[in-house]
Length: 386
Image (cartoon, one colour):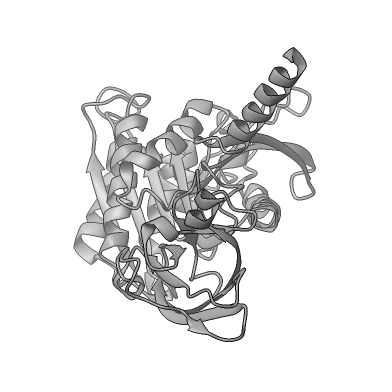
């Protein structure tokens, strides 16, 4: 008897672990040919990632994640920032490590070789060009081949990694769509980044970009050259207002260089989501098909938008295609959630390989996939009768 109880407890525990309502963080190591190094990074996948196999996710790339608080704070804040709480992100944390033998570290990753200042070894060996190749050719392809990703990529950086985030826009604007740059150093190498930003041809951008830039108290009591360098950028943005970008400048001078990360990240994510909410919302022609257990079954579909009946379970009936197949084609928004019933909440469908006890709605990603096939193995009310 005791053995049976232990087995039942173990089974119950395994089910709870499989359906945990919290995200998962992995530490992954790959060899980089571009850097000739082994590189580590964190990957956070949101709660129910394994179960929500029809859902795809945009990706946030957090630089300087060797300070793991930056990475942890980013993925922990997301549920409180966006109104679309059911559209979480995958978050990648890029880790910079110091190699004593090679005398290689964070600054080597993030900064280019100086051209205006000689003997600036304090800032490293200037390997940012190769680090950018690692990000573009190795890291991002790895993430997008191993995980269910959507097209939007957001870069988050602080201090020198914020400078790198801005430089990626200038070097290759196809890598990221949006940039959250918290206290970047525009003054390095005699205002090099500031001047390159001002001289950049923003008309060359094929897609609109979003940029958030903040500053703390840099330039008030220390790092005096930071303030005039960033003010050149601020003046350019406020006067020129390039049509190809949307931007927000955030003065957080009541914080110091370290403590500014928290308000900078919160404000940056909030302003980014406000930007998204003001964009025209696209719809995608999407076909949804289900296999039913019984020939006489009628299937209704509902969901989180008008095209899906706004959760009215008796409004939209799927079409009969054959004895056991029902289908419908709808124009659905990117963030879609659906449910199948026979016309009421009590008659909701039980899907094959999907536990509706834990996940009431089924998240799908019409912007990624335009065809979905499900199999209904039973109905809730039928199970209760049995």
